[in-house]
Amino acid sequence: MNSNDKIILHVGIDDTDSNEGMCTTYLTHIIIEQLKEQKIYTDDYPRLIRLNPFARYKTRGNGALSFRVTLDSRSQVELVEQIVLENVEKYSMFEGVNTNPGVIFYEGEITDEMRKYAINAIYSIYTIDYAEKFANHIGARVHKFKKGRGIIGAIASISIELPDETFECLAYRTQENIGTKRKLNQESIYHMDEKTYPETFDNIDKEGNYTAIEPHTPCPVLYGIRGNTPEIVEKAHNMVESYEEIEGYCIFRTNQHTDMHIQEGKSIKEMQINSCYKIQCKVIENPHDIEGGHVFFKVSDDTAIMECAAFEPTKTFRNIIRKLRKDDEIILYGGLNENNTFNIEKFKLIKVSPQYNLLNPVCECGKRMKSAGKNKGFKCPKCGNKTKSDKKIKEIIERDIKEGFYEVPTEARRHLSKPIIRMK
Ligand SMILES: [Zn+2]
Image (cartoon, rainbow, N blue to C red; front, top):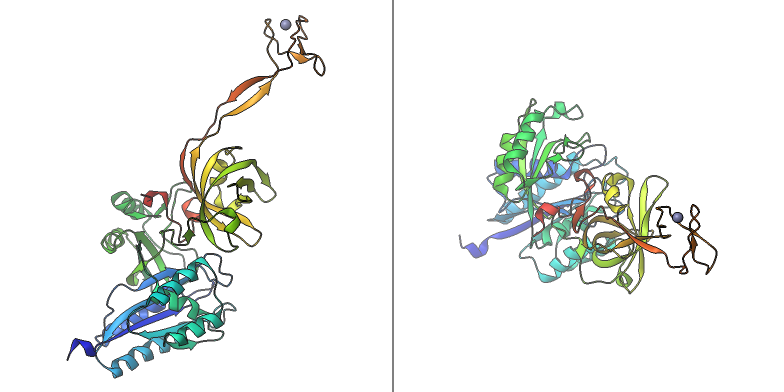
């Protein structure tokens, strides 16, 4: 058969899971295993693509799945589509209020307008209606279940270009264990981290001092290991000892930890709600705590003033934020929420501003002098010495923070946020 007769089929799936269980990655894993039984193999690792972190109806992580197969015949195309749809129908958490699965089948090469659609699905938030029109425009086959919101991410997952990428190896539990406590040899995870970090990362929460590869939901995922290459995540996976049977595992190519959601080159004035940015600015108001343990402060880049926040779930990160002072120069990474508050994911302190206390002068006798009244200088309360000048003395305040990068702890980090360990 001539290679020109081959059919490239892209399959995109999203929004099949709910907070109560299931996981679109697992569904994809099942589908890929069933395709293998039919001697159909994916061209590459399946893709796990994270979308706009502010998307309102997102399930756990707002991840959309896709894979590509090269097929010989129309009957093979039909077989793949049948297997995909059967499994989506069988395994989706349809009872979940916010579970609205969508499946996209697309034949041929990915076009520039598809790549543009995809990056904007990460920068902004699309409607289902817009996504469906776009899918029809590119000639994709659309399958919506319930409201079918999943088609938004399904198209993006197929189409997104990955200038930077990471990999995640997900190991799955057997049916009878789902919902029970995960049984992993914790020591083996520390050992794996020792041997593979920083090529793998987020294995251990260094602050909380607990292993971070296990999810805390009743989903089929036993654990997930994230890293820079497929080889390293597979190697790390083989180092983890499980006391329960592993149903199988699957390695995904992802845009996790790449900062793909961060837009550069925009000013504060140009920022849109529900979008994420990198912005150089100056602190114009010292941080203060508000009820609930959130820390707020204001910055400016000369185009506008913006309120910033490190929220309570960012834990120890707030202690660093509290050390910022007026006139510090920083580069912020994060996003503008619906209240026009910038949620900080990480920042680089580029200039620590000198800070002073203004104090009354000290008398020859060693006692701090007191004001003798407006424009009357200072007077020593002990020996009565006086000064003519009203000028206070500048006392340098030692700053307990250094220039450099600071980020939220592993637990609070968004899937898309690039950890400092991956920053060039
Ligand atoms: Zn004195």
